[in-house]
Length: 170
Length: 203
Image 1 (cartoon, rainbow over the protein chains, first blue to last red):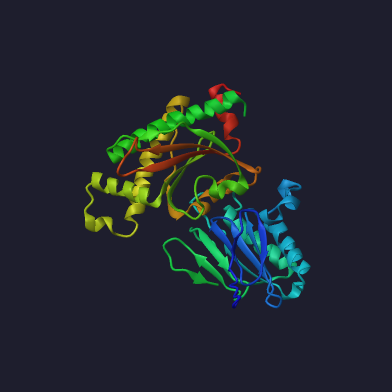
Image 2: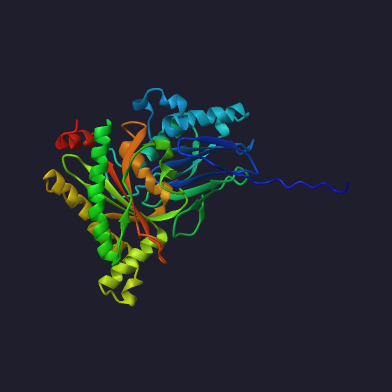
């Protein structure tokens, strides 16, 4: 008897390394502790779905079939998989937008002539977006500090938190 | 790795960490205990939370030993333990308060501590192998544990799906009003282990 009120609980879905998760409002998507890794979001402003990937490495080519098992791990497999997830939910590819953060060089250490893994991840993610025709709306990448990010599929804003700095939005 | 090799790796970590613990002990003016080193094979996707909460803030001091078997060393402490260590160094070096609070002083103090602690580690390693080993200038970061652990992806990412590290924990013995805990990770480059084992005669 009496009024029955429901509060919609807001869930923050944490995307682990190599994972892809999909959400819509009121839920939020987050990546914690992005060092060289990239937190990439593809979102559909019209239908309200968003996919977030916690990308670890630039390319699946050296790994054989791992790209199929864990597409979120590599920049080149994450983007097509995220598009596929959103298209399944009714999104039209042309309307998808992207935001990305991460790709830092945590320590002054250069193991490869190709640059740090962070730099390679940034380049590979940009290239994957470019070749899929997805527009990059916002980006905060590089530097030497780790980042944690939270994305809202409602406001399309990505909040970035760094140790010792004020939170900011892209 | 076969059991003989795993044991050899633990022994290297043991010897190195033992000397590191002594150096740390001298810096802190207190006895420092170490636990038995673990050899960890860590799936790359799990590195973020393997040694602690990915969200936790830690001081991490990173250094490289370039030699015929390149290795990386990372010294990790929770924020408050790193702050404590830098304070101890300030005291030992008699650095006045007004200088201690300048920007970057903690980083410099910890960098210096890292040099001493990991220098001792690598020096012991060198003695063991009859090699003259030296460290790169330490790189220091106060950051999220998850971001720091990405270094394992950097080192092992192109080679496979697992990272390998030895981990030794250093702490104050028994009940202590000010408890201190630090970790030393010894991370061999892919390919360094074969060379190391050959040098030790445990192929």
